[in-house]
Image 1: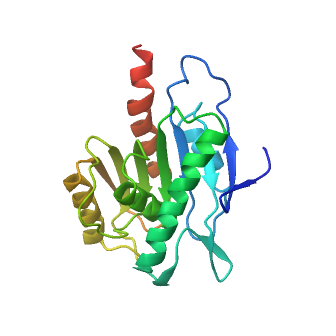
Image 2 (image 1 turned 45 degrees about the horizontal axis):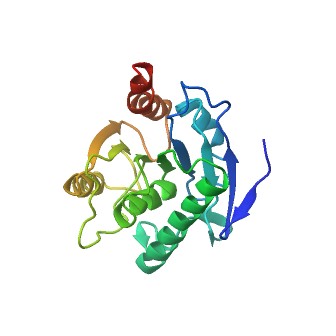
Image 3 (image 1 turned 30 degrees about the horizontal axis):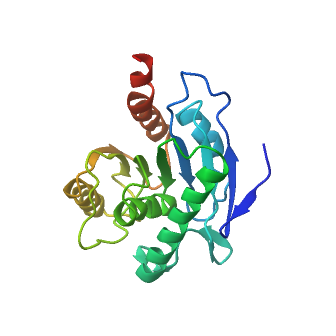
Length: 222
């Protein structure tokens, strides 16, 4: 696996598609966004499982919380520094645009796959930089902020992977996020697991099936 690179202040790894055949040419770039304490290598094996043949772009969060990498600052668990969130959301969006240009995949859609803190900034990307993402898988996400006015996300597919017994995210906050995205026009699929905050094999299976429906079934009919 290639070494990490740096662009616009973000350490990251990029894994190109294994080959640019007709069967994979339309697959999106997966933007992999780790949880608190992760890094740019964490989700790469998962990305390869979720949508084989897709290019992978995996940045490291630029905030350090007692040595743990995050994508934005928080004031307390579940309480976000909104000004910092807004600034770092736009910085991450600028990085994504520059990275896809650098690696020759600017013509492909970008789909975010985020877990926990990574899912929260992915939701913020949807809300603050509409048009950047063609879709998103948000595992264990909560409402990051509520912009006014809401963006136009018409038709943007979003999978919310939530947990009924998550000690960090109240169920009603997940429902609020789903409603906020739907009000913005996104096509939201909400899937609940009877588990806690951690990621499960069921989450991964559901996300892989969801991505395949959107980005491989259509290809097979071309």
